[in-house]
Length: 109
Image 1: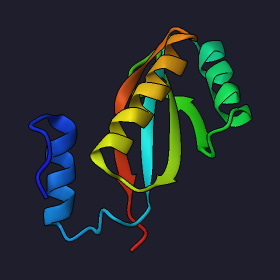
Image 2 (image 1 turned 90 degrees about the vertical axis):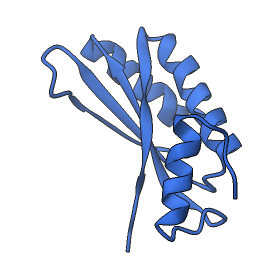
Image 3 (image 1 turned 90 degrees about the horizontal axis):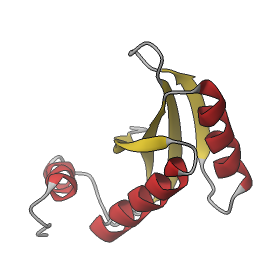
């Protein structure tokens, strides 16, 4: 399959080349960063109480004074799904003075 020539497309192409079946649901993790712990926790609570079925983890970043909120969703990792979900998290994080810091995948086997 061919993907747009951007970071998302490159990662999906590499996943496909590694033999991952992108037509099946996988665990995709989106990373949000916040400068204030209270904002990170408020964002996490918002995600957990919203319509998204996401696993949420709040923890200090390796960078001092920065908090990570990792949101994991099981989804079909199409280009459009990845981009749309990243935009959704970015919009939600912005309400709490946070921003999106990319995405990754979980492999269970």
